[in-house]
Length: 232
Length: 369
Image (tube, helix red, strand yellow):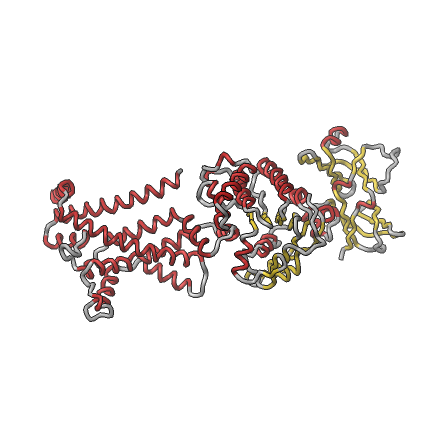
């Protein structure tokens, strides 16, 4: 019990004093997971909209793939990305193994099906007659898709929260493709694993608290946006 | 009402439309035309294909077979469909507003059609004002009452200044007073703008109040097309008559026939009608409610052109606005539509002895197969 209490105290101290090492690790976590989220949104939202709004042969197969992908184990993603980026792997020539780029790629792959799945659900929840109405107002297909996505903006925020939440807290893939290299690829989750294995429980707890505050802060902002526009 | 130019080329025309869902035909229509400046009503019972027809004409769905042409040009590809959409407006039963302000909702179509910002502002303001919702521009659409939302969707449609306005049961979802008020407003706007309009409705009064021509659609096909007066007073068959509630429907058999005047037996009674059908023919008589008059006995002293006199008892009085529907049991049930004032002056009440009179010429006779 003392250990936990010490950890929380230490976390406060680290935060208050603005420990440069901790800040750098937290910032890198935010940067890597933030980039991966943005990339997965820019590809996942259009993809999810197409799956949610159109019918084509093989759609059900793709949808079940996406649904499976939403529960993709990060270690499996880490393994596959490692194999591709390994020195003599197909993409070894890029020399990005054990760099933040590799971590962004792995996290992007984890977040993508989540964003696609949430977007699909959000667009499917719209009144089908709304599409007829917007089309009749003179919208082209692209304009229709854009208007419908704006209409589904509130449930779409859930896609951002779920995608970001999944990868900022993910450790398996980041460890495998990043390597927890201090000053380069060490992020909050990989550092927690490292400190834990060294027996530095208090420091690990401090990092955990920071991680949770970070996740909470991002979700809080998004929730505020979502709920404010709902109530008004 | 406008004078439709039915002698000129139609503005819009559809031929051989077939729409089927999982093998079941919901629309099978050889031909329909929409003329410049007319208000065309499409009426029919639920599931008769009214809405499907509207979706085909607006090319919001593509019929399995058949062609829709506009200004004489067939609409074949996606580009032509988009062009069509940018010249028409559609108002559905649901208001279907976006989760934005009233203003954003009214201007969205204009923006999609790339109308100049100055023009957008002028038109939006004009129609918000005309539909009495100018004060609501900043309100979020989801906070509107159903009447306000419907006004917004109508303003959105009229601001487009469409060449053809399509409406699918636009007032059905509204409650009584809201609906009546909006119907009046809508009617006067339609009179002012003289926009070519196609309105789908199952409400006989809406059709009577608004349209120049009415098409009755049953089982996916238009079975009768004519002026509201024609359709409502002389429906082409029993199914149509039943649906539009044109009047009393009485079954009988022609007993005697002499020079176009037939005597039809209905139970214990005989009814004189104008018909060439030979004796023994089974017939359906349609007696419009408003052609039945009610008199207080004794009626022997009255000289009247009405060939049919049926003494009976009032069994039911039903008030609808300024009118009263009086149902009399005179061997069969006969309903008359009279003004509330007449009913009051005559002191009509249930159980009272009266005499119903009908002219032979007002009775529509259909042969029963």
